[in-house]
Length: 122
Image (cartoon, rainbow, N blue to C red):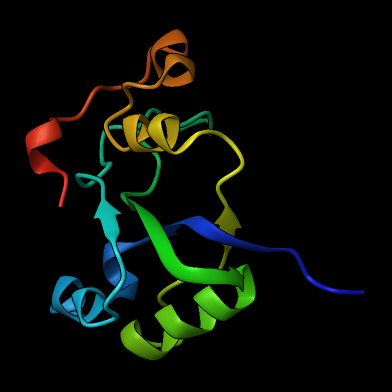
């Protein structure tokens, strides 16, 4: 059975799992990428834990339709084996996904998530 292919993907990166020059390494991949501000004020639902583990949301736009697995392997080669675990195809609109980088999407606003600054998107 053929795996689903797409051009638009999203994934999370955790600061402790990526090299210090991670932004430069992603840029060298040669595809359009948008990176959220560090999400370090997302409230946790876990008892005794105020905030979720700090992370970045990344949007990755492939040149041609590819599988999520191929994107995951490409990012792992650039950033290291522990850098990314799950790559997902963007199923909602790209506009909505981009707005989610700062929690300005309708869903994030409805859930009253902490709003991050648009100026901090890379």
